[in-house]
Image (tube, rainbow, N blue to C red; front, side, top):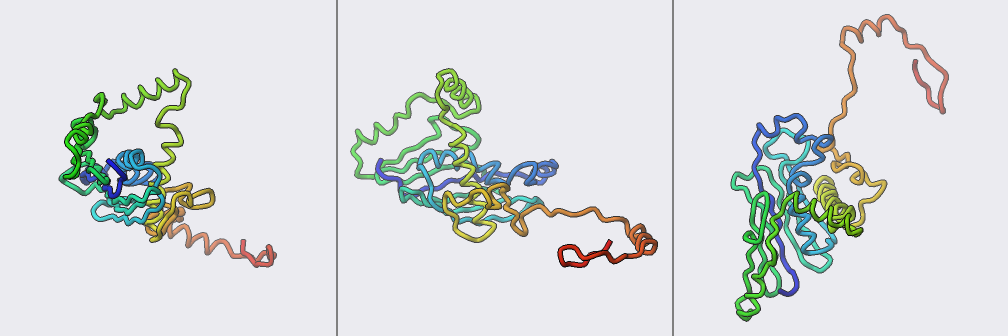
Length: 252
C-alpha cells in the first residue's frame, strides 16, 4: 500500500453525569487519567502498532462538561519517525459513539471502525483509482478472523510463556503507549511540543500524568482546626521567640 502519510485516531464515546458520580472516576489517584488514559489509549496503542515510533506531539485538553479532576476531552497532533502525521481525539462527550483509525497510504486508505471491539469485518481498504484490480483484491485478505478481546490477549500471553519467548505485548510495548499518553498530557498542560524520550526521571510527568500542573493537579488541603478552638489556643498560648536556626528566626 506504500508509505503511510496521514492518519486519524478517534475515540469519541459518551459518559453521562451518573457515570462520574462513582467516586473513583475522574480522579487522578484512582482512575489514573481521563479519556486519553482510560478510554483512548486502546486506539492509540493500535495506532502505534500500525505506524511505529512517534517523534513529537502537540496537544490540548479541556473540562467542558464534567466536574472531574482529569480532562473530559483531548486533541493532539502527532508526527511519526517515518514522516506520517496524525490527529488524535479522545472524548467522553460524544453521543454518536465510535472508535476509528484511518490511515491514508500512498496507494490505499485503511480504515477500522468499531466501538468496543473489532474483527475482520470492521476493516475497510479503499485502493487508489490507479491500483490494479488484482493487487487491490489481495489487500482484502485479512487472514484468520480473531476478534479483539482480553481472551485473545491472554491466549497470546500464555502461549508466549509456554514457548519461552517474550509475548508480543510485552512491558516495553506497554511503556511505549504510556509514554505517548504522558507526553500528550504534558503538552496539553504546559502548552509545549513534547518529543519522544524527553520525559524521564526528574520530569514531573514521569511519576504523575498530571505532572503537578496548576489547574490540573489535585488540590491538596491541610486540616484546619475549628475557628473557636484556634482562637482559644491563640489566647491561651503565647508565642515565644526561639534561637535562630540556619540563620533564620523562628517561633515556637
